[in-house]
Length: 140
Image 1 (cartoon, rainbow, N blue to C red):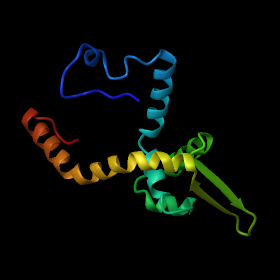
Image 2 (image 1 turned 135 degrees about the vertical axis):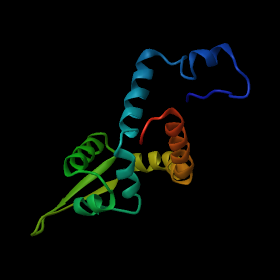
Image 3 (image 1 turned 120 degrees about the vertical axis):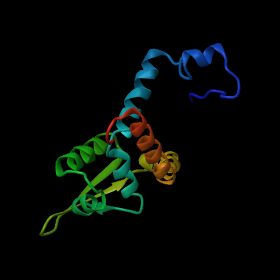
């Protein structure tokens, strides 16, 4: 795992905490972080934490997500093995999405980050407003 002792600078820190990774591993880490760090993935994962949800339930629970982005995000999560898609043979058809053990492991790691973001949102927004006002830039 990439980690760095922030208490004392070293030459290795200047290269970055993951500088020891072979290129093929760095590429793997980058791909995973690109996926879980995109705009919608973690919101979908967090929304599924309490159990299976239908597509329309997910769309209602995630403000601002378009039908296209929800479909794309669910498809990618399914391809990565992070979400199951269960189609029930009913009329009308019913499809449910649920977390896999793999994504539950991810959720354990990311949930504290989500909590941190919620806890510090107002402070970060105030800092952005202050910086924008000082630089004369408008809005975020």
